[in-house]
Length: 131
Image 1 (cartoon, rainbow, N blue to C red):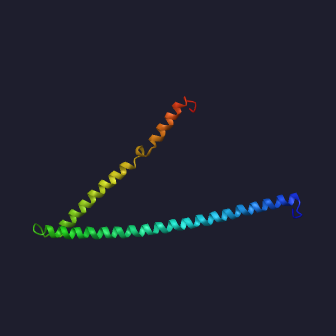
Image 2: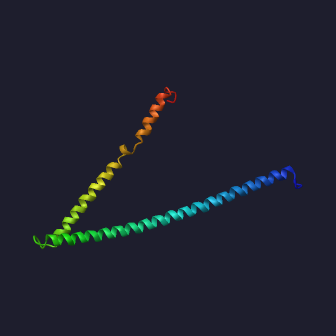
Image 3: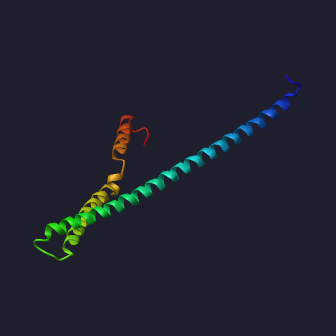
């Protein structure tokens, strides 16, 4: 040994262990901070992309209105007919999609039925010892 007593070696070991744990905690904090930054950057990119997609969709709806207006011109020259038709179609399609999504979010659809069934079966297999 290097002339240190057993007590000094134990003391050094404790100090070095504390330093190691502190270093690991600092590393974990830095890594978590980096990951949070990556998540924030990803969310920002997705938000900007979503806004641009929405803007593009509105332009496409406007183009559909213009095309429909042109197709309806032999029967009507009222400027509100084509936007009304496209608007109603958009609302009906959106309503159907939302209704379908709402059904998927019902609590009864979200319960883990297969897991509950499996646990019940396992319990019965073990002869009810776990009840």
